[in-house]
Image (cartoon, rainbow, N blue to C red; front, side, top):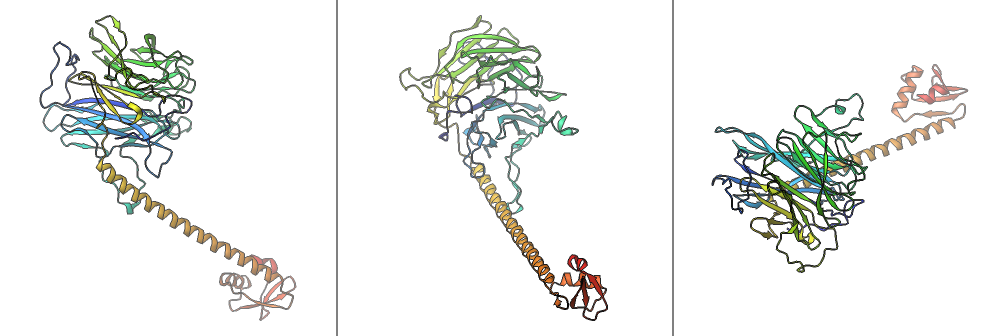
Length: 512
């Protein structure tokens, strides 16, 4: 599938790409943690059974193809499974309110993983992006594998005639707004913090073994910070002082790529690029103190980063960083604890150095995931910004097609939503027309009332009038206490009924 054309000069204030990627993977049934060793290494590795299924999910942003949200980007999902290969979910739309060029970051975990027959097994995914109002937003979905396979977003859509405003099936977490005084919305830690980051921010997201979620972003002052969710404490991290601070201002490049890995219960490592394009590693075990360590790598301007890691808190700890060069060749930077640290960067894809000219537009986004069980690293990128390609580190092969598929289910849902929006728009036009007609009638009544009032004032003493406005007639009759009066005679300072027995003043007549 071709990536929609976009202005790749990218996010405001940055020369980085506007097209972003994120990837996660897991296996089903969920397995106990084991030493991760790539199958292509000549060492014993955990071999999954024939029943094990590998799942990969890739998230991308693209300009909205829909008429109702022009100018926005959408976040979409592609899926791979051992049984089905690359396929589209029943609805591939994650978010429809992303800002132009919004970054995207995803993380996930087994929320429930039962061992007995009939027990519930649920994989939860969280996706983060920047919305069109400039705030970081969170959407979530749960994939149920047992006892019944289903997705939370697979609910039945309301019928178009019910005119319920359509929204994506992925649940949007409500924002917590500290500026709303004396409100539950200001203190509810289950709500997502309301944060407006640097316009050119990138995002990274990881889930720790202790149940924490870390969303990494760049603040307006250029500092790198995290929004932290912890069990029992909820979300925190509004950018004030040192709250959530990972790296101080004036260190990272504005719009720096961000990627992160987490494991070993509470260990988190964040990678970014400083103002000389050197890759920095920022590490913490407690999310209070962060240690900065420069890596031996410098990347091309506008190069993006993706990281994977395995075997935390062990002698076999390893990390790999991936980036795309200016001819769409992928490069790997790796760290191995047992081999003494970082090793020299190397080109890993099959593109010959001179096979393609340098890319004039910003360099490609990259996303990487370490597939559990088989421990193969998959890297996703945008060669020539036309497709999403997958590079298999072990097979040393690039698949240039097939990652994205058209979702028939999504198309059907969009058709229903479009019909719903058309009916809502039609109803809105009908109500607006009713309001316009009502206002026009009110205006005419008011003008007629004013005209009649002026005509009454022109009647000379001794002249008579017949009131045609029934409402005014009844009010005048009530003031006169004369229910039979139909015509009225002008007298000095007022009016009287034709019988002469009942009188009211000019002021009372005008007010009636």
